[in-house]
Image 1 (cartoon, protein in one colour):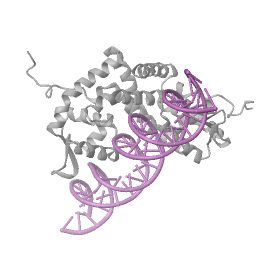
Image 2 (spheres, chains in turn yellow, green, orange, brown):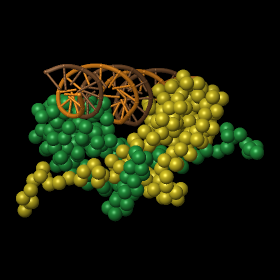
Image 3 (cartoon, helix red, strand yellow):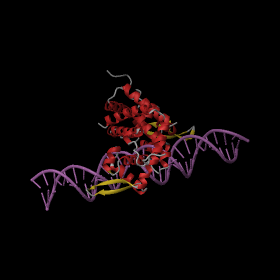
Image 4 (cartoon, chains in turn red, green, orange, brown):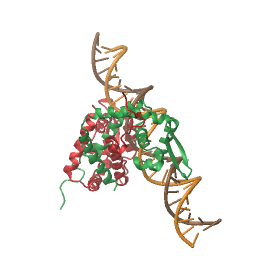
Length: 150
Length: 150
DNA sequence: GGCGATTGATTTGTGTGCGATCTATATGCC
DNA sequence: GGCATATAGATCGCACACAAATCAATCGCC
């Protein structure tokens, strides 16, 4: 009625066979790839993602940034304080709704945008795949992410 | 000789168009998907990856685990101490080479393997894609990771 | 207008990740 | 054997990530 092998003896997939681990390790690999490039801008990788979001649309509040990056305010608050301390952004309460904190780029923060272009070129070169292939993989990964976030 | 627009004014890809962000956010989404399942086993997601690795091959040292998971000893040492404190593994110096710390599963650690099978089934269901599709995406992601790690 | 419920952000606590540094052990070469 | 070098882990410092709790401002409804 049952197998002769107990559950303990049966084999289990290794991490090398798990999609989640591929995504986990590929994400870390990208962080490592970015690190030396972003070090020159004085940014960490998550800080860079925030800056990219602001370069595209300035003046978002913490919640909007969180929705764009899938991050909680408890992650963003200290990160934004560090960007503030670095002189790249300002954090001001919205006069229309004092609960919101509006994030605006400083001149220095805007200026970094030019260097970011070089970083992106560098990353593209390191990945070394044609744009269409990258796009197809990205679409698949996005689909998985959006599925498991229900 | 140059554009009329300065670099500051030209548009920049948003995070939604960056492959690195897709991997970053998909990795986090998986961690969130695993969390409630692993909570019942008393494991975090990185701890689960270590356990999966040990269930497949017991008795590895810290360096080998690090190579399998792409993690540094400075990450693994405290993590392994927590698994030790939870009674799931033992940490003993290798008598053949006292520099190495060998990680062995305890009976309790071995016993968790059965529950892990349920977790994996649950994850597969949540992803809801056929095995071949998942396999193809995984292969692409692995290729990118291995490329950018040189 | 007033008051309970909701919302946006901060704070707190735990657990990664990783660079840099340190310590102990082992190895290589004379 | 003796000493420089290399290797395996551990430690330290900093920056995420996120759950849970807290606080202030606003909204909803009467």
